[in-house]
Image (tube, rainbow over all chains, first blue to last red):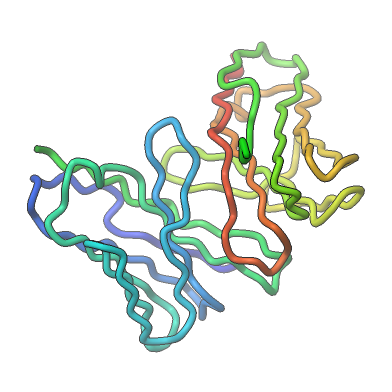
Length: 112
Length: 113
């Protein structure tokens, strides 16, 4: 079973700061998804990266997939309090019945 | 569309009691699944279904039963609740097995005393 390790587990920053969270795997991803979860709600898909070296941008969020497809990062520029939440990476595992395999998450708190 | 709905939102059970967590979706999605979320462990798959009448086990199926008699509904049954089943439960759906976006419900917070 693929293991997804996220770091850091917790991050508390001031508004306006930049941050990066990481997702690493023990084996190669087929593709990799990033979700954001707000308190009391279910996760919401932010992006899917498929190709090694791929970079995707979503406003102030930049997602990168490692060349070897074993790691990914999420960079937030000029963080805002609205970015507060739990960020989860997940392997869609299409070759295993489409079962999402999640990392343990990074809890981000952005203080005004 | 209401999307994925779950009831109840909160539930407290005593050890040994049984209950059913309800999940429904109105998007005509074939694929539905149940996850549990525990602190520091992300979400773990309990059971999933690729269509009406078909279910299969995920990573942590013990203590849980599911059935899929219709496309819309995918209830999760706890036959004899245990404190280890205290968790937040999420139901999710997507159009098909190989499709990308999975839609999650708002969750049910379950406490077993």
